[in-house]
Image (cartoon, rainbow, N blue to C red; front, side):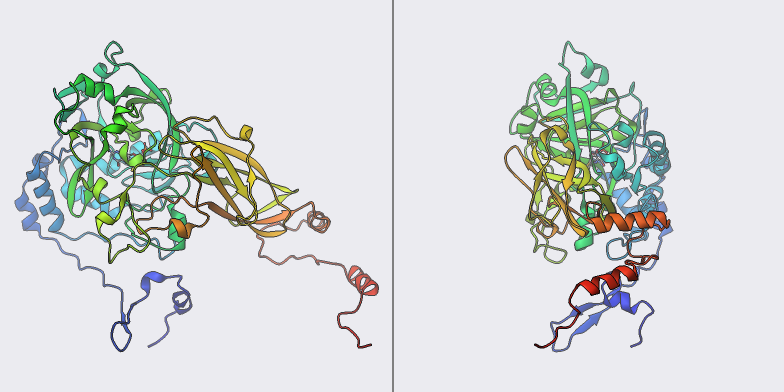
Length: 558
Ligand code: MTE
């Protein structure tokens, strides 16, 4: 066998995707090469036989652009399935065992776009329409993790620039395209196990003589927040949408206005029979395993009964942006963002958690020894409340920091389930000693939100240090120290202490101060840290002076 030009990188595990699998079950170890790319095929006749997509997948309701109702129409689902299985599509891109592209958007979602155009009809223009909305509604500096379906987070410097996130900077997590819905034509249906199923328009919901208003600051957090830390430690399930490589920005806080879902259920005469869960339907189309479906999840009645589920039409005093669910979304306080369904078109009271794939096949927290080859869905805990977590937004890992004994740090801390950050601590020595952020350096305490913080972290070291943050919530829960303890096959819930490595340049040390002044005089650049200095580290005079005063290098015998 001959070496490849990248042999060294392969041997060092830097291009793991191209490694053969070693099968050691026989007397000899066998190398099984990575699978060949699937052959392209397209059965035009089979696709044509399905019918005209403009009739099959037409606009569901006047004024609801990009909405196809799948859940009540098995024949439509079957037609879409036939189209999707009668041709090949590109596989999921590899981004975990190779370098992540240096582009923005990071991943483009090519196969999601192709799936939409393959189905056609109302879905044809959805990818283009959705991207236009991203450009209209989101901040120009957003980091586009996936172009379509759109997933984006603000850059670190803007994540915690305000304790309440401005709408253009709020992260977005979409499983499909953005349906464009007219307010005038909007209503949703509440049915299933309720006494009197009914439809509600937005005007009806907003009628304060019927339903009291509710305004609440709520932090929305995706369970994939900080996934990149798990990916860089060990790869896991890799599908560019369900497992998007989020950093620390998939979290945001807004003031939502709407009504408590409990009141609406009451207006329908309450739950009947064995009604225990509320299932929410979103008007977007999600593709999974060659099936088309609407985004669908559920929450228990106990959560609704506690007035912790809102139907919201305003976000930070403005109508919901289209990308965040206009005209109406669900906001479930203290649960993962996945349960807060956008573009709500139906609520159904049911007797058990929904079997819809987003609930039953995704957002599962597996134990560590469960993975690709032994995983059963029932091994995973369905993630609802998020555990306590925190992150450092500034400085950034691998950064060189010049300071005079303390390093200015900024970040966020959050706990789900109605618990809140009570104490935030930082360590500059890898987690041995911890300093408490003074309470006045934390943003306002609220039951359902994060707290942003700032802190001058004492540090005496010269050289590389590991800076960690951890939060204690009001129930005294805290975070495990290492990402290894949080790692799981689905790469969810990175709850371990966020750790960054910094090169500390401490001007309190006379030698460091003198060298920095020397560099400034000689106009020697500071970065990068690895480039050797072009000025001598010590004068020969100084060197000789030292040896005149001190014992020589080697000791004499007496
Ligand atoms: N609702 C619909 N209809 N479709 C979606 O893809 N994504 C969910 C949730 N609601 C989603 C949805 C997920 S996983 C999250 S984290 C939140 O929306 C994100 O809300 P945001 O995009 O407003 O920040």
